[in-house]
Image 1 (tube, rainbow, N blue to C red):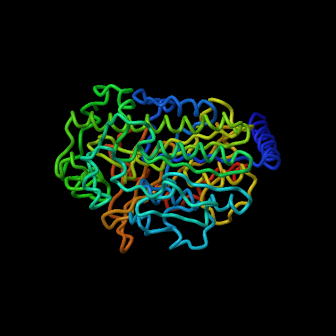
Image 2 (image 1 turned 135 degrees about the vertical axis):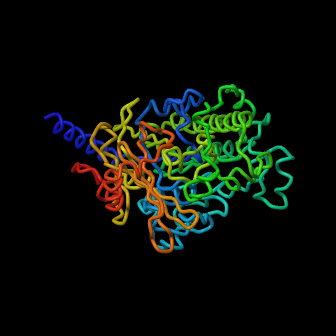
Image 3 (image 1 turned 120 degrees about the vertical axis):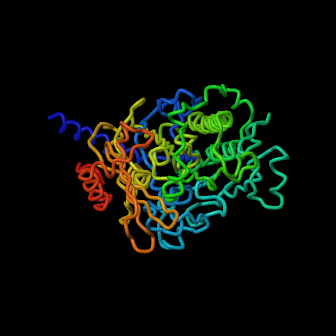
Length: 488
C-alpha cells in the first residue's frame, strides 16, 4: 500500500505542477558550471566554501549520484543540449572540440530551441555551449549568445600571464592567478551582471535563461578575496590518495589516463613542468586555486539566484544547476578530466521546482545529464522529442526515494580506443575496444564504495561479475530505465 500511495502522491504532484505550468508557464534558469566536481559544502566537502550553492541545495532537491555522458566539455554539453548521447556526434566525442553537433545532427531540436518554439524567450550568457573554437547555435536562441567566445588570454589579468596571448590568444600563462580585483574583472562576474540584467528585462515574459560560468576550468584565476577564504595547508593529499600510477602502467594503457609523463591538459601552463609529477607544495597551491575559483563561481551564482527572488520570480521559475563533468586534483597522481573514472564522471546536480520539490531533499537515484532535456520539457508541459536518449526524472522530484535506473552510462575516446562505461549501484565497469575494428583490448572493474580511488581492478579476479556487467553494458541505456509507469 505504501508504494501505491507513493505513486498516487507522485501523480497528484505532477498534475498540480502541470496545472501551474499551463497557467503560469514556468521560467527556467539553467545554470551550468565548468569543470566542477562535487566540491560543494552541500555534498559534504569540508574544504569547500560555497554558501550560495549550499543555500540553493537547501531550497530543493540535490542529486547525490548524477553522471555526465563524457568527461569533456564539448561532448558533455552537446549531450545535454541535444538530449543525445555522445555516440550521436562522434567527432565531438572523439575530442575534436571544434566540431559542431549540427554537422552530424543538422535537424536536431535542441533543449532551448524547443522552449523557443513554444513561445519562450531563450537566451544564453557565458559558457553554455563549448567556447573555443565557439560552438554557437543561433537557431536555439532568441538573441545572439553573449560572452561565449572566451580566449585563454582573457582568463587572466596579470600582464605576465597575458603577454603571449596577443600573439596566440589561446596561449597559457600560469595555472593559477590571484589578483586584487572586482568580481567583474573576470568573465564570470561579467556573466552574472548580464544575467541579472536579463532577468530584469525578461521578468514579464516566459523565459529559458542559460548562464554558464568558465571557472573552475583552468586557469584557476580569481580575485584574491576568494583565495583568502581558504587555508592552503588544508589542501594537501594523503600519500595513499596522491600515490601516482606507475609510469609503465600509464604508457602501457594510454587510453585510460589523461595525465601521463608527457601529456595532460595542465602540461602547457608555464609553471607546470613538461615531464614530471606535481610535488606536495605545488599540489596544495593548485588545489587551493581550484577551490578559490569555485568560491568565486559560488558568489556569482548567489547573485543571480538572489535576483530571481528580488524580482518576484521565485514562485514560477525552475532553477537547475549542473556541471559538465568532474575533475582529478592529484588523486592517483592524476590532474584534469577526460577519463571514465568516478571522479571525472560524477557531477553536482540540483533543482528547485516550485510546487514540486521540497526544501532540503536529496536522492541517491542514479541519473544522467542527458536526462535534463526530457525532464525540463515535462516540467514545462512541452511535447516530448521522440529521439531523446534520456529519461525524465520528474517523478523523483516529489518522491526522491523512488526506485529508479539500474545503471548509468558514459564513454571516452583516446589513443585509438573507445571506452564504454557503466556505473551500477555498486560497480563501475569499463570496456575498451580498438576504434578501427572493435576488438576488446582492456577491461576495468571497480567496487566503487569499497575502492573509491579505483585502484584495484577486479576484471580478471571476478570473471563472472565482469561477464554480467559486460552484458548489461551492451544491453544499453534503454534496458536500465526505471520500470515505474510514471517515468518517461
